[in-house]
Image (cartoon, rainbow, N blue to C red; front, side):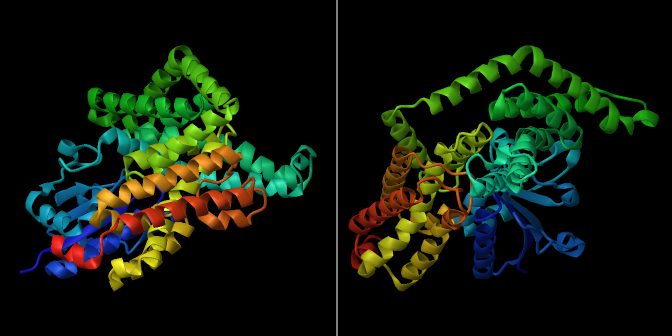
Length: 459
């Protein structure tokens, strides 16, 4: 009898890994003869929701997620946790390991997120949960600010105008919420609902105290672990237990977090953030290029993995302090891997199979949308040649973007953001950086890749 499984996929941005991992798992399940239903939790919300019957009939539940997910509906089921990257690169292996090593999920024994030895490091997962909830605010806020500049760079200074209203929406509302939401959902990921209020309040203290996104990260982890510790240690009579998650834990965790942020860590972190902002603002051309090269190489190293997300989070966090250059370098370099693989399949057609050439076309389109994961099928087959090629082109694109002084108001959207007036500064030079980096990656891999005959012999 074939195995019956259900899966949930979710990634921080909810754009690429979420759906590509779901598709990979479905394809692998068909090959193995498994019955599989997959629920995706992307940027557009949950799709293909698992029904109660789906969950009840499933032998195994696979959680392929890079962010925190609610597992309360899976209590008593065998759960296997992994990342979206693992599900995308090795879907058959994930399905087989799930059948062999999934463990029964019990909230008391497993905590909020459950776990297996294959789950992501908890600190990374909690951080990505916060980032994923913050991103829509960054995108909406950045684009509203960019639209306000359509009427002139200083038009927003005139009260009562549309430009001023757009700046209020983007700069005073959306951007003001970025750090509190980041901190709140880091804390929520750690401690569930009792951690949300302390995290939001700690994040607001970080934002108003000048500690920025670094302070928000500190506040989120501080609030979350404080709330979780108090939840585990405080015991109340049964008649008062209902007060614990809505009154006792939020109050005590908020007091601890707030006082520590104000009197202990807030000031030092604010000074670090101010120093970082001043350094970025006063960088020489050489330093700017070096930073662009580093961020570009990181963005192209693991194509959506922890190193990629570290660079991306750095760029997104700086938007709150109105530092837009690093984000431009990050998006330029992030487009290079997928674009480069598409170019490579065109430059060296005879070295690629028909299936690879079709994948190259899809990869090119994904690259235009700033979805670097389009290069993953190529990197999975030939990492020794693909990764150096993507890192070289990405580093070049990032360095050129910083050299040209390009800035970016929104952290996603690819080439489509360029159509919004003032969303990108120096649009022509920005395009030049993206095209140059992509051509270098495409040409480099076209030269390095062995021909089909040689590939066949090696395999």
